[in-house]
Image 1 (tube, rainbow, N blue to C red):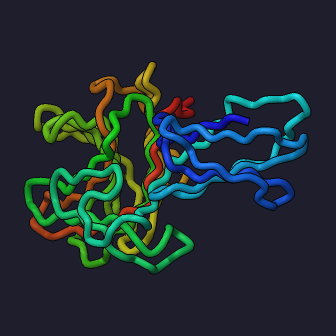
Image 2: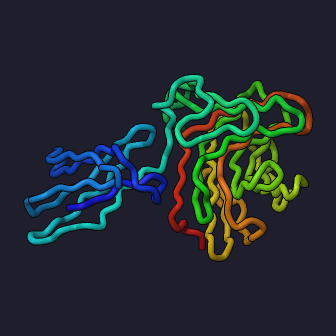
Image 3: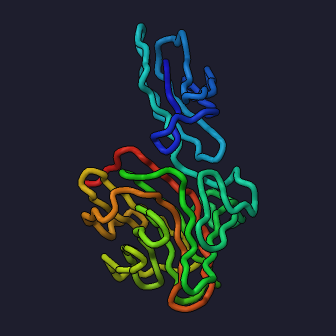
Length: 276
């Protein structure tokens, strides 16, 4: 059996520990090489499961499947997509695969509500500027993508906060975003520095409560869907930008009140998403 570990579904990942299991028992272990491959030779026919773990990412597991005599599997994918921030150094501003652009960013602890997010570490964004949002970008360029992030706005934030996902980021003057606020949800574009709301929907969000935001984009048709807690909020076609980086955003540009947002469990899939 030959399998390949991937980061974000696209990049071969070195150093992943992969387990071959039979009847819930680990029978073989291998570590992915510099091209992401692991190999298990001379497997007795039977029903096997695969699981894996690697630094910075959530562990993954796949349902058991049958391996028949004489069969050699070569196309098994082991995909690590969710960054939990548990292995990042406290107070670092640039955790694995992230780069802060504006605002104050740091790995901190938020051990409350373990049922809502991985604990204790979170990636906190602070916007204390009246004219620049706090933005942190994930490194890979994204054309077709799915990005999901859990977030909680701290109750000490100003009353006109916004927080969410930024995508198709070209530079600080050109990007798109999907954000929540206390009473409204927005899909926005910034083009040559000019901000426009392309979609607006009444949707209450409460500070101090964890929510899950998701944006998925189909490259070919520029089709996008945006979700809050699995509910579709916006569905649209938009080709103003064909690609760019994705990331996190926190802002309060209406008044100079600080905004504090904890982000966690950021999932990024750079393979074909499932927009329909």
